[in-house]
Image (cartoon, rainbow over all chains, first blue to last red; front, side, top):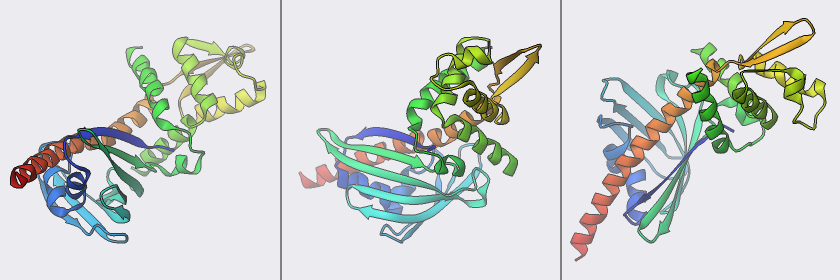
Length: 145
Length: 117
């Protein structure tokens, strides 16, 4: 299964992180990979509710993603479906799960973006992350050749 | 775009199998290998290895050249590069977003501590 998992530690309580993740006000402050602005942030963080975020990158391009909240447990876990508008990047629907765990310095956040493609979703659930390291090595070898 | 997506699906489907990844890893270490050499480390029969090689070839991940009775297999890294680039776009998106999320949440926390004090 094609998925991507990132783990970070944040010096804030899980409830503070949870609200930053799930409220429109919070989303407007951080959504997007660079310092470009969030243009639209809408969120209705309850099971069956929807969200929509439009943001602009520093290169000037605009992107929009939206989806449905599949599970919301404050302040532990939020699961949402994900789709890019226009399907330019990727036409499939994928799934984002954010889990929060209290740790001494605040919160450990684990983000998993999964079902990144249909074909492998149907295949068996082979851990992808370990394979990724190998692939990267392979990739680097190909580059050097 | 649809073709690109199909190509990616094929690449990922080919890579999801551990035997096929092990074959690719072998090819990464050597420049090229014969089918017999590739089959050696596995406890599976030659026809099964041939089947895996066909999947890898269909995904464009390897090339097979026949010379006499020997088939030489080589790695073709281009589809992998595409798959990696595609995945790393998501990784960049979330790595950047999580950095910003951490900054924002930590500011919020500091403010609420100040208010509480």
